[in-house]
Length: 567
Image 1 (cartoon, one colour):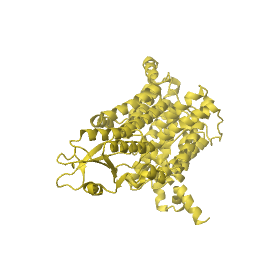
Image 2 (cartoon, helix red, strand yellow):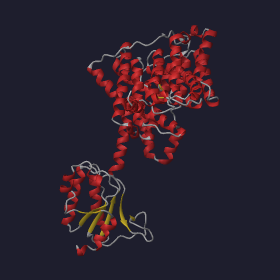
Image 3 (cartoon, helix red, strand yellow):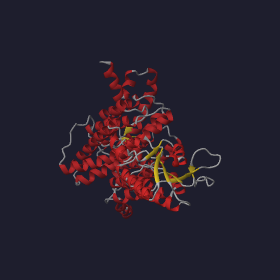
Image 4 (cartoon, one colour):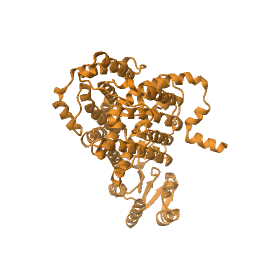
C-alpha cells in the first residue's frame, strides 16, 4: 500500500494507527480497563433497552458493536460509546409516534432511525459541521436534560414498585402513578429499594466498583434464592444468544419523512452530549479531539448499531469515566470491552433470565439523577434571570410537548437568544480620555471628550438585516442629541466582521440622508473581509465607491477631519 493511502487511512481512522503501532506495555492496562468497562456497559445496555422500548438483547447489541466502530474512527483515546438515557428516550418518542403500537414496526423503525442518524453524522462530519454543537447554550442543555430526567424517573418508578407505567406523556404518567400506587408489589419494592440504596452507596463511596454489575448480579441471586419471580417480581426472561440478524428496514414515504426529521434532532442532541464528554476527558488528559472526526466516528458507531438491529448511541460518560479510572490508555479498551461482551452474548445469556426488572429500574433511576444540575440552576438564578427562564422553559417544553418537540424548542430558544442579542447590540460614541491612548467609549470614560464637529460612532456587532434599522436609528438619534452641529460622522467599522446586502442598502440610504443634511460620513478601520460575501467589483462600485470616504484607521480619519478645509 502506498504511503499516500496509508496517510489517508490514518486520517480517516485515527484508531487504526494506534492498533498498527500498538505498544505492548499498554496491554495490561487496556485489558483491565476493557473488562471493567464491559462490566458496567452490559447491564447498562440491558437497562437502557427498557427506555428505548426494545427487547433486552437489542441493548446488548447496542452496547457491543458501536465500540468496535468508534475504536477505529474516533479521535479520543478514552471515549466509550454506547446507549445513553437521553438519546434512548428521544429515539423511543420518535418511533412510538409512527409505529402505531405495532411491536415489529417499532423495532424496524428504530433500526431505520439509528441508520439515518449514522448517515446524518457522517454527512455532517464530512461537511465539517462539528461547530453545530456550540449552538445549544449550556442553560438550554441543562433544561433539556432536566426534562429528560423527570420523564425517565416517572417511567421507571412504577417498575421499581412492581407495576407497569400507564398513559402517554409526562402529566398523564404522573397522574397514573399516583392512582396506581395500590398496585405496588411489596417484594418488588423491597428488592428494588434495597438495590437502589446499594447502587447509590457504591457510586458514592466505592466508585471503582462496577455498581450496575453488582446490582444486577445481586438481583439475580436474590430472585433465585427466594423465588421472587413466583411472588410477582417481573424478571427479564430468556435472552437469545448469538449474532443479530442483519436486516435493512423498508419504509413508506410518510415514515421516511418522519425518520429523517427526527434523526436530525437525535443527531444534534446526541452529538452535543457525546462531544462534551469527549472534550472534557481529553482536556483532563492534555490532548485535543477533532469535533468533525468525532461526528464521523459517532456516525460509524450508529451504523454499526443499526446494522446490528440496535438503537442510537453516543459518547457514554459513565463508561468513559470507568475507562479513565481503571487506567485505560488506548482505543484498544473499546475493542476489549466489546469482545468481552460478545463472548457473554454468545455463551452466557441464559444467566440473565432471572434478572429482576426492578434492578434495571434502579440502574436507570441512578443514571437519571446524574442529569440533574441543581448547582447550575442556582448559579443561573444568581447570574441571569433571562437564561434561567430559557432553561426552565426548555424543561417545560420537554415535559408538556414531548422530548423531540422539546429539542426543537431548545433550538428555537437558542436562535431567538442570538437574534435578541444581535438585534440591538452595544454601540458607542468615542472620545479622547486624558492620559489614555486611542479613542474610547465616553460612557466608560466619563472624562473623555468628543471633538467639536466630529461624531465618532462604533457599532459593536455584525451589520445584517435584523439590526440595520437599529444602526440607522442610532445614528439619527446621536446626531440629534449632539451638543453641537455635526460636520463629520466617522463610523468605526473595526468591530464589524460581516455585512449583508441589506446593510449595503442602509449605508447608502444613511449616506444620502446625511449628505442632504450637510454631514459628511466616512468609514474608518473597515476590514477587507466585509466584501467576502459579495462580488468585489459590485461592492466597490455600488457601496464603497470613490465618493464614499474610507480611512484605514481612526487616527487617519481624525487627521483628515482636522485638515478638512484643505481637502
